[in-house]
Structure formats: structure tokens, C-alpha cells
Length: 138
Image (cartoon, rainbow, N blue to C red; front, top):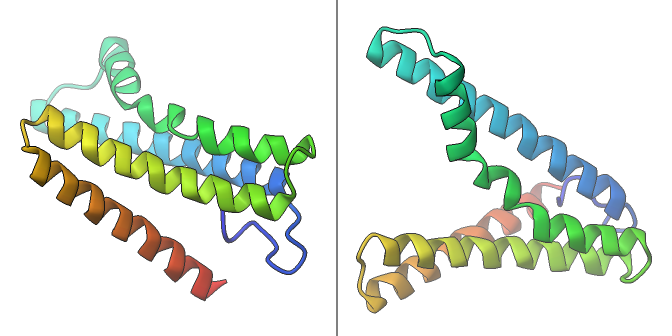
């Protein structure tokens, strides 16, 4: 999102949304393909349509997780927010989703509240660090 936005004018929320959607779709396709190849190698049997469907369904959260940031960016396109505000809100939403995922995954794995809080803090630190590094590069 940082690479596609223009920090000087703050414009381009539509471009950021487009980059976000297509990047996630490309990562999704590559991820599903890599997992199918791994299964093929491990099981010594070519994947069939059932395997592909199972993998697509199992990896579908990669596609749904972008809903909130994309909606925020589209609100800027509709001029509800200034573009730069929407980009910032979308970044915060991504970090929030990362934190929520850390909480959900850790609690689902039986972690204590303390362990889950630590997982959330680590997720937030990683998310903010990635944003900081990307901002420094662009």
C-alpha cells in the first residue's frame, strides 16, 4: 500500500486498492500452487480437482482478509475520506487484522491469555516494523 500511494499529494487510493487486490490474488494463486506441488511431491500423486478445491477453500482467508482495507480505500474513492487518510486507516486496519489473527490463532491453539497477549504484541511490532521499513524505502 505504501509503494502505490503518493505521500506528497496523498492521492491514489484507487491505485492502492488495485495494487492490494492484485497482489493478494497473485500471492494466493502462488500459495495454492506451491501447496499443491508440495502435496504432489509428498504423496507421489498428481492433484485432482478435489485437491485443488480443498486447497482453494483452505487458503481463502488470504482473499477475505483484504476486505476491510479495500472498503476503506474505496471510501476514499467515493470521497468519504481524503486519500492519504484512507491509506493510513487501511494500514492500521491491516495491523489490527494481524493482531486479531494472532489472538485467534493463539487462543485456538490453547495458549493462555498471557501467551496470547504476547503473540498480539509481537504481531503488532512486526506489522509496524514492516510499515516502517516500507516507508523508509519509498
